[in-house]
Length: 443
Ligand code: ADP
Ligand code: MG
Image 1 (tube, rainbow, N blue to C red):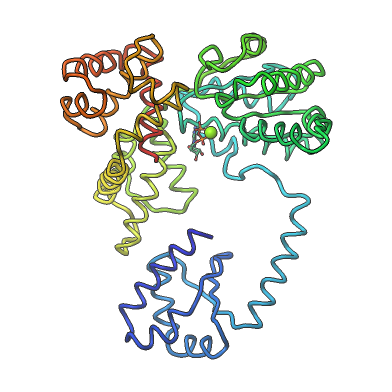
Image 2 (image 1 turned 180 degrees about the vertical axis):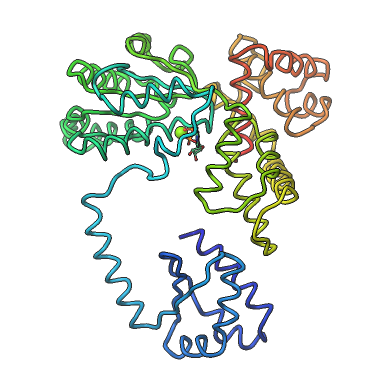
């Protein structure tokens, strides 16, 4: 819906350029977008008079503007009664659908998942679990960097089971949701956690996304551990994802790590060029965007570490083309999309933001990163922050040293070089750099 509102703003700008200020204020400005349904843009008029005038005098301009901004050819303006009918009908429709609605993202399916060298093992394991839950690879632990398809795979398993094995009770939760569910039950009036247990222990398949966010509180860990054991003993399947392997999740209990080792721990790597290119082709097709081949090649060559970013640049490319009224996006638009995306993300960067993200990622206090302690973990996080400031913000080393860390520039240079040298050689550091960069530039 937000997207529709934003698009409508653009339509209004188009319209404002075409009519007198008075007509615009009197009629067009008062229209509101409702939704796009099956290729028709529905618009609400504040009263029947406005509807009539707009239909009679401005329908050509409206249609032109909508077609330019959204590539949609049809629209309909609702007056008061029609709008009431429409909302009533929609509410009923939603109520009907609620009962049987599939809780998984319909776009995240095995069919839409492009398989390449970087993810073929994890794909096969996920497929095998979906086909035979409770059998092999239990638990399945998937780890890998930001935007590489972990959540997509969990939803694929969900969609597959929902369709082929609808009697199974399957749940997807983020680690945060699991924790909140638990804490809510724990803190309600009766401290009754039987509801929580009823929900989680009656499952056939439990999927927990982003387990790296598990809190180090003993009670939450214990509840997770017990839920895990309970399900596992009854051959119920558990699938977990994380941005790093179990033994690198600093808050995770050792006994939990050893439980994960009972099943399959499988990583998912950044895609190679071939895979990135096929993903782009597939996305363009799914979203009905026409994009020149050399534009796809350009994007695949230049966005290398994160599939979400790959998609972001592709949709920006298509958006720029549609703004210009081009039916097909060209390499020019792809270049511009990449450039503006990077600039937009970099414009908002501050050293403080970088330290914030590094601090959350490693779970190390911000003040410790800024301070002088030299225990390995703290020093590593500090070096990483310095490296990222140099790389992403082009800040002079002297400035970083003087204004942020109160150190001289040779210390800063040392820290930067240490991380830069490890990039591409040390797997762990390379993964961490890619993850952190993705997180920082997505802010
Ligand atoms: P993660 O959970 O690992 O951060 P997501 O599963 O959210 O990443 O994936 C980010 C985006 O990239 C999603 O839109 C997803 O559909 C897409 N994506 C990831 N891997 C693939 C793939 N192999 N094929 C097609 N799309 C993919
Ligand atoms: Mg995810």
